[in-house]
Length: 398
Image (cartoon, rainbow, N blue to C red; front, side, top):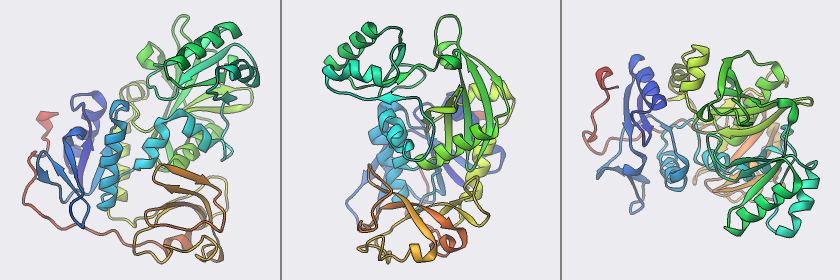
């Protein structure tokens, strides 16, 4: 497998571990600066330039897109997708997971437990919103934030109202969530690869800080997840369009409550705590997927054998373009469309009268055999130039 790791931090623990794991398994691997790409839209065939030269003969890309470059980074990933290069995390999956409000909106329609949450833009609705989630204390979160940054605990209503109004006055959108007291400063990070959790840790906050993120000084210990928590983690990652994800959950009296799905989860904390080769699990999964059919069929937990969840990319030449979901004949094949993804738009439970357009992504549930019959073979791109400017990484360079 010729693998490109998209990262702005080639010396970071996670990037280095992934590169070493790939090299140890005999794969060609190079770490490529995400901002070093240029998207070529001047030709009939979608293309990319890296440091002034065309990209060719890459089998798979593993995006490590930082929050500060989400827009450009996902544009690069989307271009790779159009070039038939495999990626475990789709561009729309990265975009959706990065926006906490959007991810909660998507997950709330799929029977995933989440803390009671509210989003208001009018300062007059702040106090009513706090009441709707059960009153103070509440957790206030920025729509975009990582490693516990932008997460505030307000212990009384007046303080919560003042914080929200102050942030709104600067044009910052926030989400207000119920504080789950029984979690007691702890949460769970499940590392999902494909259709399973390969490692899990319990993170505990230090001192008075209720945030348990390891970057905030939290402690981590390896755990074995209960079935409900493992199922929630896998389903959440799949619904978001991510095959490699860190899923954060709270332990509550009502079962797992999902906090966040991270599309670029760190490896250092979870590998150190568990002693497991999580990076190797990621590379092995990608290697198995490269060269396989383009439709990634994933067995849904808790349903009859022979049925599963799949994501179908509608290409320009597809027979479904211009047809409604009803006229497509999918239902007659025992396939139900759960959601339709169009650019950054997500339409859950779309009406059967909805027209299907080129480049739509249909998240479907149904007969695995029927869905496999819809899979086009992956197209291999032809080489356009002889070499790329960067040489493959050797062990002593990592």
